[in-house]
Length: 445
Image (cartoon, rainbow, N blue to C red):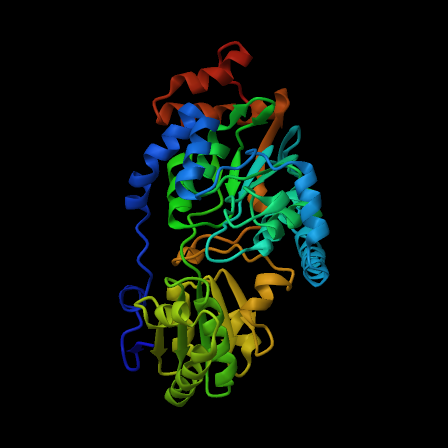
């Protein structure tokens, strides 16, 4: 791994942003490439979806919507141990997300005047589940559970058809994805992938008896092409985020176990050659020991070449700092998707962190626990956006609506202030909308 030595350096926010690594992820350029695909789906619907599946996935689904009997067959074929893991992950996620549900709050501003914040779920959500380098049933759990906890009434899932599938699953998404959907009670599943799947959710389609209604919100991870398509349809629909490659930062001192740190850095690097693994430490000895441990582990890893490319890439780094306090500043500037704290007094150090998608405290809270079974959500902000955005939660599927209710005396009491504001902004009609209720005169309280 490359090294950046910040010992004795300026730790201003500007300097740190310039010094810290980031993966190159040009969504704007990708958006121009996928724009014709998105427009094609918008205009030609199912015909375009079929042609694009043959072109990019090398397979033509028997039906764009996966039949219920195929979903049930996937459940029956699911390995019992994996089924148990999915169900336990779901149980824990439901516990955590149930406590996130907001309640309506009414504030009495004055006698006769109230403002209520009413929380309403979006009416329909489309969830994208990737099907490229790996299979992610965990992503189904992490997206579906908060949507259901929020009370979303209509939820559809799509995932790319797999040309390797045979038998009853031929032309459909990975059976594990299908089984997870069925276990979560999702019956509307499509065999569509890539940018065209995002367009399908944004515009909908009709195909004989099959109707895919447009959604209000699209969530779920995907390739740069999926992210680019999300950018193109944002505004017509809502999106969860423009997710970039995954990233982990580990803040560690000389009390950390280098084998733990190495294993955790490696765990995220196996996602993608663009995945970022960053170690921030005040101990050169730990840095050396972690590199030695990585060398051993990478040579034995199943996805060794992918991991090696990620760890040696410009997005991954060992960052040397003067002390843990400086490390906190560096980690806040980096705003990692996943941040592990492996230091003395880890809980106290973690409490000082302001910018991170999720924080994993101490030697027994690895990121992979959060990926699957902690109960937390693993859909998290990337590329520094944790400085201003949160991960997926129940709130992601809710909209706050202010309900204003004033009676005549309450409006009379504030009317002069409203008229004054309207006049200062040269919007007399705003003031007249109040005075019209009082004989076109400014009332006195």
